[in-house]
Image (cartoon, rainbow, N blue to C red; front, side, top):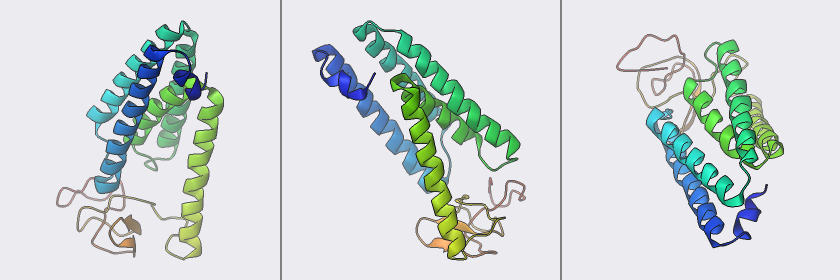
Length: 191
């Protein structure tokens, strides 16, 4: 099923499609702003997005008379959420659990429409992240041991480069960011 099909299959499906897109935009924007500001993805927002998405996808499936697509959504949740969980476990702190939970919600939403869109979006995210890291390394702002885009909101927390949305790349030993998961929790720092 494609997202475009929601606009051509009658007024009720069209309204459900609008609600779905607005839900995606609302929660996606709120979580993005939170991640940029404090490098946290609040559980309550992720859970609400998961619940709202599941309910809207169920409604769309019922209106279309095709609940099989819900199985694809569940598979997308398992594939993307499970893949990110694997990276989080094997990466020993390279990825936070907020990212894992968000990946599950994104897998649910993308998997509903097609596993191809799930694969393409995942590939796009990893290629984009790789280009950001490569650019940082070429500019000598990052090294192979750098923690990219770590929290930068809490003064006095670490000793590795990070990215501050106000000031750009921060040098090592800067007091404007948290750098490691194992750093001592000073002044409320949660790496």
